[in-house]
Amino acid sequence: MSERYAKITGWGKYVPARVLTNHDLAQMVDTSDEWIVTRTGIRERRIRTENDTTSSMSVAAAQEALKVAGIGPKDLDLIIVATSSPDYLLPSVASQVQDLLGAKCGAFSLVAGCSGWVYALATASQFIASGAYNRVLVVGVEIISFAMDFTDRTTCVLFGDAAAATVIEASNEPGGLLAYELGSDGSGAMFLYVPDGGSNHPLSQQTVDERRQYIRMDGPEVFKFAVRTLASSLKRTIYQAGLAPDDIDLFIPHQANARIIEAAARQMRIPIGKFYMNVERYGNTSAASVPLALVEAIDEGRIQEGDTIALCAFGAGLTWASAVVQMGTGEISAAHSLFSAGRARFLARRTSDLVLDSAQSALLPLYTFLYQRRKKK
Ligand SMILES: CC(C)(COP(=O)(O)OP(=O)(O)OC[C@H]1O[C@@H](n2cnc3c(N)ncnc32)[C@H](O)[C@@H]1OP(=O)(O)O)[C@@H](O)C(=O)NCCC(=O)NCCS
Image (cartoon, rainbow, N blue to C red; front, side, top):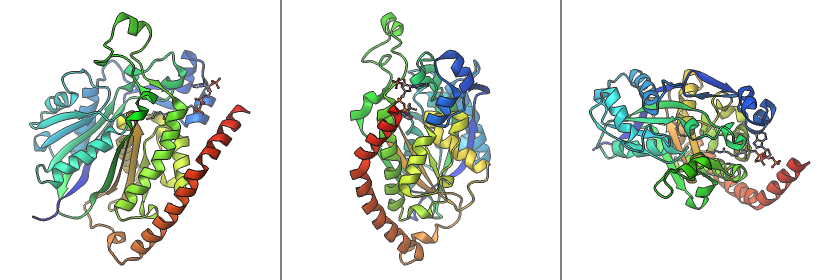
């Protein structure tokens, strides 16, 4: 049997029409546009209207993705919906999406916080590589505003609602998903979580009175985890693909905070212009964040046929997930062949990165100390 590759052949998005700006939030909690922009890079985010549900937003994005791929819902072999904000606890929102689309295939939801869509992409590629399926719809969607405490300024300014969908198809031509890394560190679970509403602490009048159905977060801890993880996971995955960071045409990081992305770019010694950002317009849309950025990057002409892109998400769990993808249907890049100039660059860059990573880890406590001191001034 010839090799099978998983390629992204369709993409689409849906964002709610309602815009919530920093100025709007400043009327609701003790914050300011200046604070939010300087600490996060976010200027506005979308919030669901009364007509938007997780399933309806998924379907709108999926219909666009199917159109781009040139296939219909009945051509799908599987649907995976990554989300932490389904319409109901039961059934899985993926089954609602399957029904609303008019697809005739299996469907399941996947929960991995903001890393969900990248986890789902890696999962879809297994079904394709094994030969089980040829066409998988992978959706990242979130109505995260339902879990937001709009009296808590430390969280409500950061998040927004959105959906994005991709069609992943089998191909015998090399390309598509070249490498991925999935990670989890459950010891950090309580840094970003919803205290009540699960089986451990079902909702009651008391939990609602104490606002324990909303997201709680230790911002500085998550920030440190994100900066540590983004650059290191991206580099490991790029090397695993047999490439060096310079071979990547565009980086698509999780859009949580512009400062996290800037720190990762500095650590990787990659110009910030190579990191796609739309956090300014949407904030952190959790599982929808990376696919939404991917769709917008394609729509803006930032990604061309044959380009190699690197994606990385991180979030509740704590989880993280990275992927390297060659877009389009063309041949795999020359950097992959054993004795090319690309290969030599790969080896040289990997060695220098290993040395620099060790130095950076040793200096991290000093950076943290200096940052805290600067903030206190
Ligand atoms: C949340 C975050 C922006 C805060 O930035 P920070 O520089 O770490 O700021 P701190 O949390 O130290 O807070 C500094 C001060 O600002 C205050 N503050 C917090 N949110 C505020 C807001 N929206 N407006 C104004 N002040 C705010 C804090 O209360 C604190 O005040 P204090 O010093 O009097 O106690 C940052 O920690 C972050 O981005 N963390 C990662 C969050 C994330 O991405 N989560 C999702 C991952 S998927």
